Amino acid sequence: MIDLIKLKWKKYLLGVFVLVVVDLGQLVVPIIIAIIIDKIANFQTNQKELFNYFLILLNLALIVAFLRFFWRFFIVGASREIERDLRTKIYEHILKLHIGYFNEKRTGDIMAKATNDLEAIRMALSMGIIAISDAIIYTSFSIVAMFLISYKLTLISIIPLILLAPISLIFGKIIYEKFKKVQDIFGELSEKVRETFEGINVIKAYTREKEFLNNFKKESLTYLRANVDLAKSWGLYEPIIKLLSGISIVIILLIGGYFVIRNEITIGQLTAFFAYLNMLIWPMLGIGWGINLFQRANASYLRIKELLNEKPQIYIKPNSHQKEIIGNIKVRNLSFAYDDKKVLEDITFEVKNSQSVGIIGKIGSGKSTLLKILMRLYNPPPGSVFIDDVDILDWDFYELRKYIGYVPQEAFLFSMTIRENILLGKPDATEREIWEIIEIVDFKKDIEKFPMGLDTMLGERGITLSGGQRQRLALARALIKKPKILLLDDTFSALDNETENNILRNLKTYFEDMTTIIVSHKVSAIMDCDYIIVLEQGKIKEFGTHQELMEIKGYYYNMYNLQKFANIKHGAEIYTG
View (cartoon, one colour):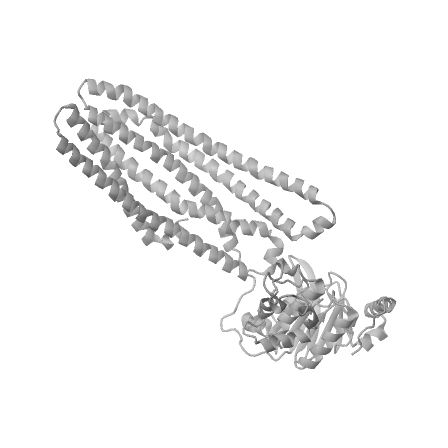
């Protein structure tokens, strides 16, 4: 937490300085009141003098009220700036993390760290610092003032307060552990809500609303119990502090009254002593509250640091290769594994500029992983993948991705307009370029059906579109950048044969110099490629042109015949170029 405070140390220093001035202004008040009471009790004052004291107190009140704005401006303002910067840092760091991280971690927990945990840190860096600074100033000044009034009475009255330090340490540790548990459960609850919203169609389709509601109630009850458990600890701490302060007040009332009777102190001094003792009650509570806030913040900061310490898997070498890509791809003896689970083994093939390669195979054979490696979403072993005879690890991956168009298996669209989703591929594309791409992906007839055309707003994840429309729009987003290499991961799975044939023809016509790799379960999408790779359990099982693979009569041959029979049965034709 100290490293965060250092970021805005000037503002905090100014804020604490103003806070000291404000507190000192308030701490002077009991002295003035004591003087007034003693003068009135001894008939040593007059109306004019009383009015002057009134003006002094009024001016002090106005100065304190005026300066209160500034300590809030500096301290609370600094905490807000730290919160903003930390939130930006988290978001920026998340964007740099490798995609495997998001497969391992729950999205809800990541969201909780960027919201709830940040709020806990901000509270500690604002109200926590204020509470502890107040406590130190009030405590030190009050005890000094009390000693000056009567050191005997002070020593007697603070005896119950000696227990404060060990009690605060014990409760601080308990509160830290319990708050960390609360935040962890909140992350699980957030993930449950996110998952429910994303899968709402499935939940409704299988009429599982009641089941999911009951599961949510259980999670929510667990979160409630954890919060109640935390509240019990904090709720027990405050009464103990008030009990100790109450005992001190009773002691002062008895012994202080005795000292007044013996003329060891005056009535005004006893009144001031009571005022200072009351002022000690807030510091005692303030220290507890501040410790509570900082314990919560420390728990939250550890969770955030755990996220920020996650090293991005993708790295950029110094002086990395930056050059326009031609489109030649070489893969030599590529093997790749996820957490010791081998996905690809000894993959070797070569694609020349403007060639097209089809990849087919069973689910889990490594097809999508191969494309992600070519996109450098995962790092391959050195010396196994080359783009234009340069090791893919030596390329600046921002430059690399600039020339690669990638359409993932899940055609993800953002809650923006159709135009904005397409322009993600090329923000400065002209209207003519947009419509040209729309024609190529055979989306024009769909656009004409939307009331707002290109400016039609899409629902979350493009839910307002059909599966085929989402795939074509995702393809348009990739093509508008006019890539040198196009990677398509089962992009035609939701398309009918006629639309698929139209798009394949257009790709050949408009992108003659583009290297294309198409992963598909549909033979019709890859049969016209220059050659085809059949993957099985991460290995190349079959390799060759459509005709060569048909002669082998293996997996590809069987898939072709099965799909041909299915298409004939439904009155469709397989595109043959």
